[in-house]
Length: 101
Image (cartoon, rainbow, N blue to C red):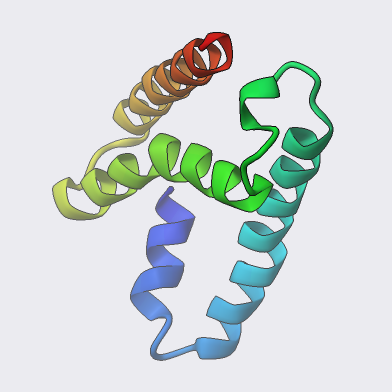
C-alpha cells in the first residue's frame, strides 16, 4: 500500500518507474488472479463473467479504500495491516455468498 502510494505520487516525474511497477506488480497480480478464477471449480457463479473483471473487482474491493485512506490519512503500518485483514475477510465472505446464489 505504501509503496503503491509512493509510485503513484512520483508517476509524473518517473513514468518509466510507474510503468515498470504497473507491469511487474499490477499486471502479474491480475494475471495470477485471472488464472485462478478462470480454472476454479469453487466459483461457478462467475462462469459467465469475464475473469479480468472479477479479478479487478476483488482487488479493488480489497485494496481500493485502504489505499485512499493510507494516502489521505497517513495511516501507520499496523492500521494498514488491520484494515487489509478486515477487507480481505469481507471480500472473501462476499465472494462466498455470491457463489451460493
